[in-house]
Amino acid sequence: MRVKCDDPRCKSIHCFSIRDWEVDALYFTLRKNGDPSYIAVRKVIDKLKADICSSNIDLYLFLGNISNYPQNFTIVGLWKPKKHEKSEQRTLFEL
Image 1 (cartoon, rainbow, N blue to C red):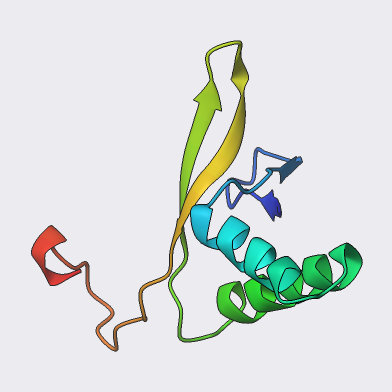
Image 2 (cartoon, helix red, strand yellow):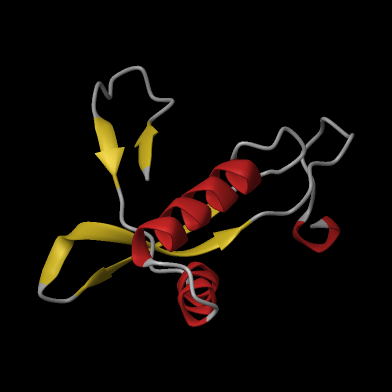
C-alpha cells in the first residue's frame, strides 16, 4: 500500500506491506478454491481497493515493526468502521 502524508512538510510516498490476517485468509481461500496465484492476487487487490476507497468507510491502519528492522513498518491490521454523519469529534465509546 502506498500512502502520502497529509503533513505538507512530508514530500514522500510511503510504502507498506500488509500483513493483515483477513487479507491472507482471502488469498488462501481463493487459492484453495482453484484460482491461480495471479488471479487470487488480483482479486485481493480489487477487494482492498473497493473497501479502502469507499466513501462511507473511515480507514485506520495498525502499524508494527520487527525487532531486527525497527525503522521499517508494516500494516498489521486494518480497521474499517463506517463513517458517521456527525462532524464533531467522537469519544472512544462512540466508535
